[in-house]
Image (cartoon, rainbow, N blue to C red; front, side, top):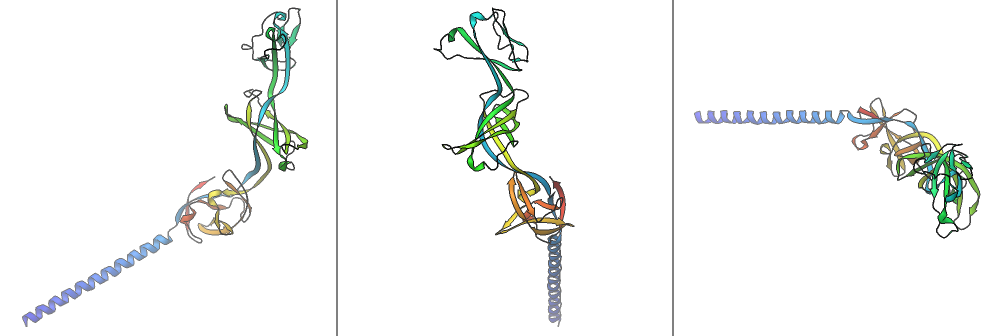
Length: 294
């Protein structure tokens, strides 16, 4: 009897332990499932931006050589100079100032303000070794002759913006187109265009090779960052944020400039959209905006 009683007690204890283990596992599993579900439903922290207007444009990149806006040259025999011209000491001269004084009393006056320089005379030219040529260049404005493909003829007109850069300076010089040829070069199939570039500090000088950008078809349109646009097959869409809920919004797009995409339809100005991290969210999902960028 005692042995049977011990067996019954042992089995009872084992049963209680098994039940406790099973019950504990069930409780733990339920808590884990609840935690997972809560994590799924927890708002995702996202970076947002606003739909804004941006100036989109088309452009042609080419090159051209700087030409002085105005030039004045004089050739003087060295024996005719009453005093030598110090080109290094006086590189710039104002209108009406003296360029040179001759032995016969004649004074050569600058007809406009500009940069004074000496041009070398090609050896062999009669009397060249006994003469100098002084140049006066007006370079506050520089002229640039540009050849553009004839396919752009309908787009190119006077007044279009032009920018110029050079490896010599880390800055951009601005100007505009001032004339467009009425004929196409039959050999190169190009149009000759002249632009004028502002050079107020006279950093650029005639003869410099410049990188030229002609800007046309400028238009201010709604835009979003490239990273915000999603494409699936033929569909193009944005994740819009409304009341901290993600809404998929189909859009029609246009041009792309400087990491911006033109929005033709589908969005309105100042609407809040997902700027990046599109792989972290899903439509109708909850989000929290942790940062807003331009």
